[in-house]
Picture 1 (tube, rainbow, N blue to C red):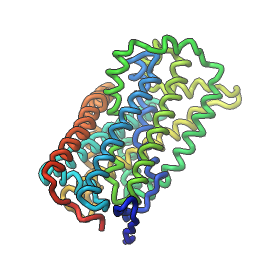
Picture 2: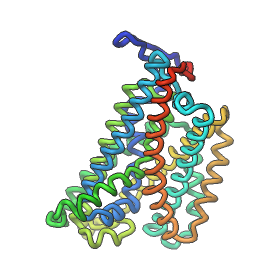
Picture 3: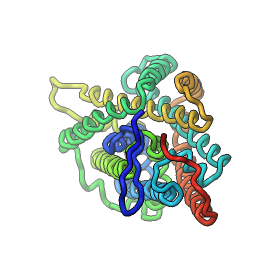
Length: 391
């Protein structure tokens, strides 16, 4: 195991974690967990919520989510500076330090359940949409089992390998976005963006808060603290990851509004798929959308792998389990079984909307508030540090 190093800055010890994940890979983690939802029903719902200002909605919700993540990071940094002499500790030790042992256990179990449910709903949505776009005569359970087997196979390679592969996808997504932007240039109607305030600033403010739930899984950056190098790595990961996500979503929704308008867009289930189908190179080059479908499925699978992996990792951390391989198989079997329960695509989409815009948002905000209150109470009591540093 790698040895932890430390250096002095401003009279205090600043320690490095034992992990090898850099800021680029941390950025990849944040981005890959949030971006795939733009390929599903998120654009249609966003445009339906606020109309022409859906692109502005992504900026506002992105800034709110960024503020919450940086605030939690600041609480964590202040905690280790005050009680641990600047030594990095695991997020579990930090949460137990501010919420107590029972509170920390409950906090971690709830987040494990949230990651598990996110995996369930995402694998079901990607399965349904694959059947709608490419395998129209395929069997739902068979395709779902194939996806589950692929996820289980990739999980066994570990987080660092997954993130390095996913980084290549981030570059590919950025390039394809630029290409798509220019290929659809003739389809744009800029007047569709007016009025820029959409259905009103009140609706924009309301749904900017609710939209935080689309990025709730970005909390993963804190659960992988042992894999990161230092606090600066975490901060850069959050900043760069949220910048990438916000810009990516904003540009895509601008393209969708200029192409379809705010009347047609909410009626389309797969707005991204409809968008790439508008690309027309020539009569000899057809079905360009198949290239984008491959990218979309790969991105979705990578995101599912990470959320499932994190769910297992959190369970292991909470219950002090050392061998996660057996739990991976059990968790994947549970995920597949639950994903088969919705009797139709509409039911699955409804459940996903409720989970993202209500439960995920509420739990993200609640986590920030409860950690802030716990840290304030801890400072008042001036207790000693629970964690003893990363070993």
